[in-house]
Image 1 (cartoon, rainbow, N blue to C red):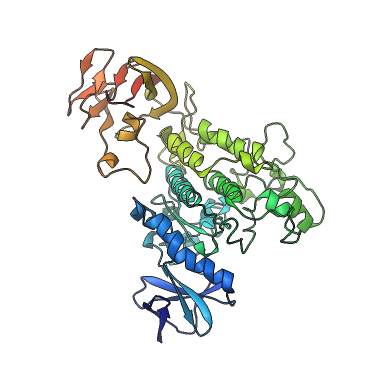
Image 2: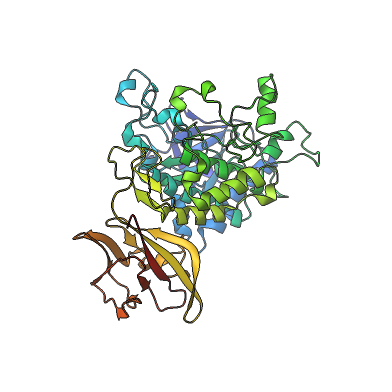
Length: 503
């Protein structure tokens, strides 16, 4: 039966009611006849404050993000409600349907055919944050076609960090950021934040929930039994979102939880959970206090090798992320002001993708690894050593004309890899503000006749400083050890010095 509902502004919406709606934690969800949107009704009656919050979410807050320059970009990163309706005493919201890549195409490995299919179900992030779902010895492991590769998980994390950065810039906190409320597709590197109807505005709209287990900040967990009006009670905020974001990034890259280790705080499971995730929370890879390291004799075989922090330490994520994980889970774990911002995560993730190298083992499960600045690079996942010369572009920038200083940033080279405007000029940042022209590559790298070459596609002032000659468009320059290339004469233009590893 098709039913029609009317929004306060007069617009009408239709939904199909077959008496069997999809059920979320707090809402009953019905598709529109053309399946372009859903109408989600709250099962509990919404009070005045809740309705005002919802009205702000579909109007003021939405406009604050989508009606600005570059607003179109965010439609792929947020599944944001855009209207509010009332029907038979129930309050509902109109939400766009998830993009098709966020639904399972294959689901479980065919060997698990006797299990109820998840084909067509939403790709909640929880499927991709736990190691057992990718372990071939686990009955319910996902089909390889659903898993993507390690590089794509970095793209997923960049998009999540970018979306959270945008929310926080608008003064909004999600309040329940978790792998339950984020859809991801590791095949394309896509991500979208969902369940946005509980946004927190400090001083105006308090949180409805304290969060999802695994992602609740320690200060919220350790004060959750205090009265809501107790000044010592800590509630979800931008600071607690930052903790949840750090946990999510750690889990998507390492398929384990940063705080769930082998330490027992209390024989009562509930008290142990409250202490281990609250007042006594301790990073499983803390460099000096190793008491919470996972005990491998207590770990399920399907959680290996990921649960083994000695075999796969967080340092494999590269220097920029290691520094932020330290800030999040050591310095900022019990000191919220020290936690990295979403902006810091976004920048560190982008810089790390420039350090990535495809594994030369075609059967490697992760396909990529982060260069560890060693002279003999080895994939940490399959232990395959890199063979052959490996060019590294070390970036330098000019504070004053003719003087260049190192930038603590580099670009790893592999066959058919691209050079982009944000590599050429430090004043260009790869984010939602990129123009169509800035998204196009300006050059690419090839291994040609036993030599590494940079092919200039569009750079008008590419110069070989070592040879003192210009590199015209549609020509190439060989990458030799110590060679200096000026990528651009413009302000912010970078100089690179080539380093050949395994030379």
